[in-house]
Amino acid sequence: MIRDKAVGLFISQSQSIISDSYVIRLIEGMSQILNRKRYSLILQPLRLTEQNYVEIARSDDLDGVVLLNAHDDDTGIGELKEAGFPLVVIGTLADPSIVQVDIDNRSAATEMTSYLLSLGHERIGMIVHAPLVFHAARERLMGFRSALEAAGAPYDENYVRVADYTEESGFIAMTELLALDRRPTAVFAGNDMMAYGAYKALRDAGLAIPADVSVVGFDDDYLSRYLNPGLTTMSLPAAGLGSIAAGMVAQEIVALERHSRAGVSPRQTILPTHMTVRSSCRQL
Image 1 (cartoon, one colour):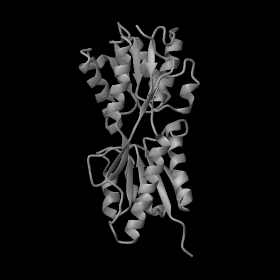
Image 2: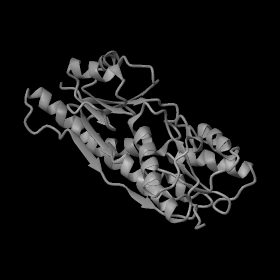
Image 3: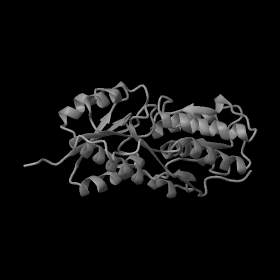
Image 4: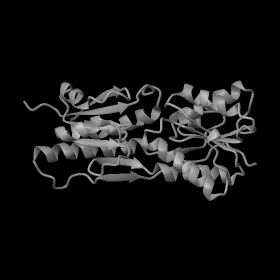
């Protein structure tokens, strides 16, 4: 009897997996494709320093791996590649030989920052959603900075805080921004979970959104539309990223079985984003 194939979803820096609806939507997208192919999906939450991916893949008897929250210094990626495991990264790496699916984080962050600038905000804070070792975090910060510089607005590192994926880190970052001598009039939260923490910090400080401080996010999580006020955010095709990654890794598995590289996945696929405007910002 031929066993079903198994694909592992390795999630680095995964302490927020249960509460991050971006990850849940991504899993939903993967599951739709893999269920159709009778492939199993095995979740592997990993610590940032945990890089024994080959050992994990072999112990779980995996046929392929999809990696989320990858970064260029991750030695486990090269080991997977050398061991011949079909691999797809949801994100962007410097190695062009690895199959990747992502969004244009820099362009999306530039668009979001430009929106705040168009409302008259110049003193804009940013809560980067993750350590800068991660490509998406760096790119969103670069997009933020480039939009400010293009508009002739000052980029001040004092108005930037780097968080660690959790709502609590967003809360702490927002509290620190509010303690500045001249607090920001608007804050760009690098993902919606950061925005949730920022909302609480603002309310604990007795400040109103957007009357006192405007807030925008990134991801368009389920809860973002139900916040009060509804969160203006960058909508990502999370389920689409998951479904494409699942289709790509399945294609890589079949190609390996056939000892053929014909028709394998494109090296990189970029999916579109769009801004969803709600009521968390005001015109100055």
